[in-house]
Image (cartoon, rainbow, N blue to C red; front, side, top):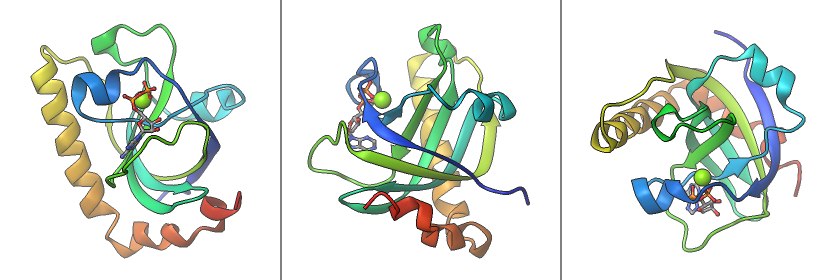
Length: 147
Ligand code: ADP
Ligand code: MG
């Protein structure tokens, strides 16, 4: 297995499409300062652990790429934290330990098929993160080191 990789920063505003169009909120991180990391890792869907400074550590499934369905021109980092929150957390420090790769970024013929695939990705991430190989990273000090 490959080493995990690490990205962190404040949660920024995206296009507001995650929750409003898809029913899938994604806590966007700035890509600035992460160019070399991003160029080392292909666009696609990853999973791992997310630490939110004031709240805790959660499973996450994440897209890195251009979101071809929406024809974005900029690469984005968009983790979906697999937890129900009662409010938004824009501006909070978010730490990601990325431990696995699910699939490359592809385009979808419809919004329905995109949403169905993201839910399939979520189920894969949920199960994988329970395996000892991946669950051990939940305790990585990086996740809470901004506290
Ligand atoms: P944006 O385009 O601004 O990223 P989204 O529609 O993707 O908007 O919603 C993301 C925002 O929703 C996050 O920045 C965060 O504040 C909030 N949020 C609430 N629940 C979650 C969650 N489970 N995972 C990720 N973000 C969440
Ligand atoms: Mg988002």
